[in-house]
View 1 (cartoon, rainbow, N blue to C red):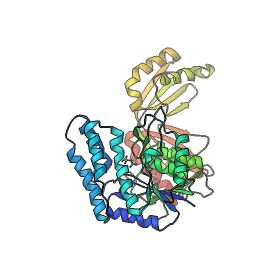
View 2: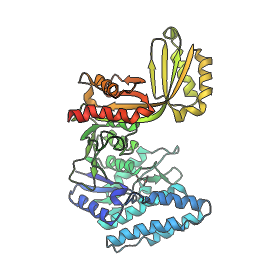
View 3: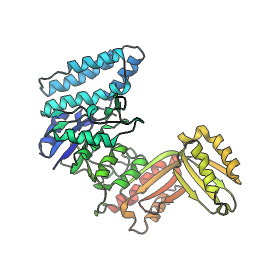
View 4: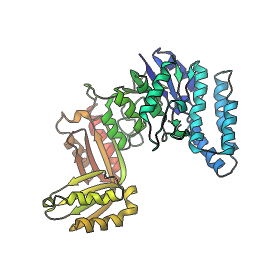
Length: 439
Ligand code: ASP
């Protein structure tokens, strides 16, 4: 039985955190492959190693002196090494990075060194083998993750090691250069490693005891979810909930491996299980609430639009031509409403509106901005009557006007649109009616 453990930056921010990590690893023999992030923040005003490295690159690539941030990077690792009492030095690696910054600075290479160096420290501390992610994780000619090649190389490499540390966040691109995933991408590496060795679980260790039912900046002390399905997580992540990188889901999901989000500072907490399917009901009717601000609605009206089968297509085409993703499409008898994100739409607004006028020839076109969308997600909503009415009465009690409603037939998700200024209040009201009241 193999477990893959990934530790986030705050779990490896200093020597004390490294010791907690070792205790966690040593308390379970099946934890045999570890994926570290780069050291994160030790306190609020601290700077993550990855951010310092990006700064080194920015300075070096414009011919400026990068010694200050680079010294801060070296100091952090040296402090960790000293704090752990290791007889080990990163001097050669530091020199190599410095020479590269001086001769031919590369952004992804520089940023990836945070994980690379931390992987070396971790493997030395645990006495485990080190597998450079550059040798086992690959991107294709279009810059996308190459799962077939990676899986083949990585799984046969892992078989050669009883225990190994594989740094997160990067791999090698088609031209043989270092390439990173997007920020927070060590989560993806952990998932890839778990899939390659057919782990029984992918443990993702962080600094919270699991996924929260709502944003803690909006709801104070929100409940932790115990179980969530991949589909629910996708819905919530898309609508702004964060803890794990969105793309980290795919490798393990495909391999049928659950993710367990755990807290390095409270290892006794069970955390959240992210699973493909579960018979377990969530404690509350809803699994979670998430939302995003700043959407626009475009209401397109035309009498008898239903008698024109190509009307919808023409409208959709106008957005497609400008590569603007449609968030929602709602239809009335003689109206059609398109919801798009302001940031994607605003620069092309007039062009798109005139194109719709020309192509679809509507009777009127109305645009409204400043709309927030809130997703109320839960696999248990399907089997319960009155969920929608609870949401609406919570919002009505708070005197919040609902601008739109969208409930997919899967009943996994009810989306409501409210004005930006009502966003936080709306989330608190919905949270209250489901979580506080059902407690
Ligand atoms: N160190 C990288 C970042 O800060 C990747 C990660 O932590 O997952 O984004």
